[in-house]
View 1 (spheres, rainbow, N blue to C red):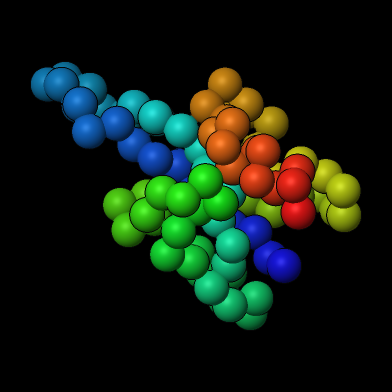
View 2 (tube, one colour; view 1 turned 60 degrees about the horizontal axis):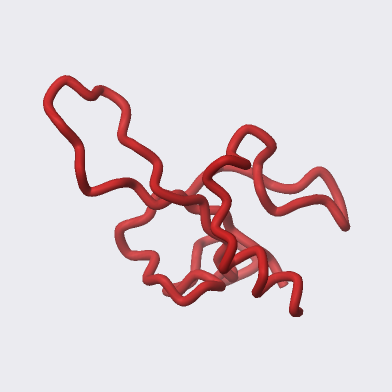
Length: 85
């Protein structure tokens, strides 16, 4: 199963903020393996419609789905669901 990584952005974006605040980074089953498009729901059950796809692929089998520079925003629900697979 191919996994796509997305980031959920905070809806609270104040004036003067040029970069959106990251709320969480989620794992999503790919809609199709060929295009790498995210499915409609994350592994933790959140809708992906308003999420931004990250251009990240694990280095190889057994590597983490989470980009190393995004660990502080890891969705624990997605991580738990992937571990249970």
